[in-house]
Length: 198
Image (cartoon, rainbow, N blue to C red; front, side, top):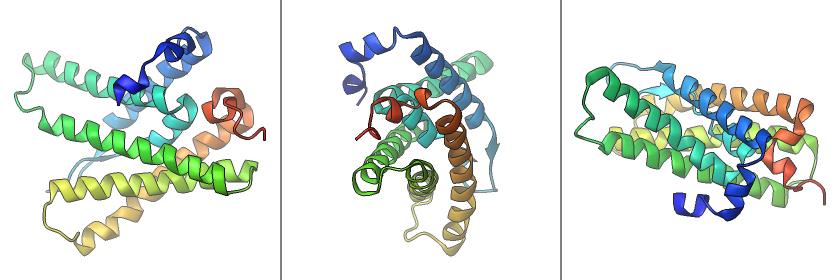
């Protein structure tokens, strides 16, 4: 995936100061969001993802790069704190894989919204951001619960928690994208690509 993300066109795009600033801000925002964790006893760690906003602001390729950096920073911070790298990287690789799958689904859902829904401001905000983030968070945490708790199907408690996780995620991404689309539309990659200028 990352081989596809980095190409000659991407390196030229990274030379633009606005794109550099957006990438840095997104990496900082994702790093901070992922440090605010909530966890019930015996459950996986839950945190805001911010994937939909990152992928829509940076585009799919830069969004994938922005996902890897906070995980690498977390690995370096754990090394700095404990003095040794963890011997079992499977949890980190699993988290990375789930994030890449969720980012891919998020961008794919946005493209489906763009293709089949009317090209309107409301479509970008509600379907492309809010509902997209809700579906992405639901998918990510469903997969996370299935991997962490291998008893299938999911219990009623896990199904009950999914809307409680997905709605705040959707609200956070929807509000962020609303502000960006209204006040800084040139910062949003899907709007810079001219998708809505048909």
